[in-house]
Amino acid sequence: MTATPKMRAPAVMKSEKERDNEELMKFMKEECRPVKGIFKNYECVGGAVPFTMAKYPRQPIFSATMQDGEEYEVPLWVARALNGIDVTAKERKGKVGFCSYPIHSYTIDKNTGKSVPSVGTYRQRFGFQSLDFLMT
Image 1 (cartoon, rainbow, N blue to C red):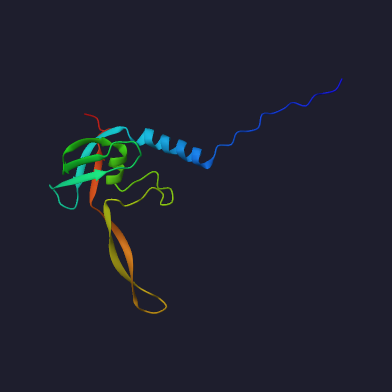
Image 2 (cartoon, rainbow, N blue to C red; image 1 turned 180 degrees about the horizontal axis):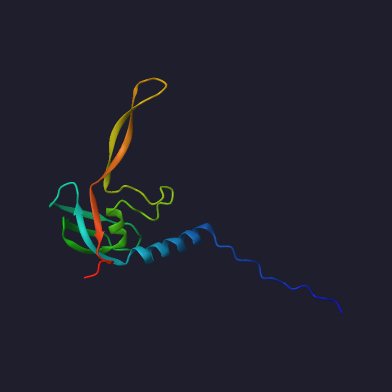
């Protein structure tokens, strides 16, 4: 009696484009859900700011004028963008600083003794405080 070798079906490898598309769809499903929260304008307390933003293909453009201290329901990606976060920005570990600006400072170079400009910190202009986890 001879043993017949079992044939395996070749493994189907997904292309890089297919993997990226699946990952994009996963992010879209997570980030397009609505969240409630309070818009914060740290730069001009009490002021209103118009926003028009788009992130994902085939999704509606977000456009609204948001008043400091008012409650809004926005897609999760908008809330994250207002807080300076983009989960799809892997190279920057999700921190994009969309609504912030750098505060420059000067340090003294040890070798030359001259002042060297550098980015000290970032100042957040806007924020979005989630109400989804608050108990009422």
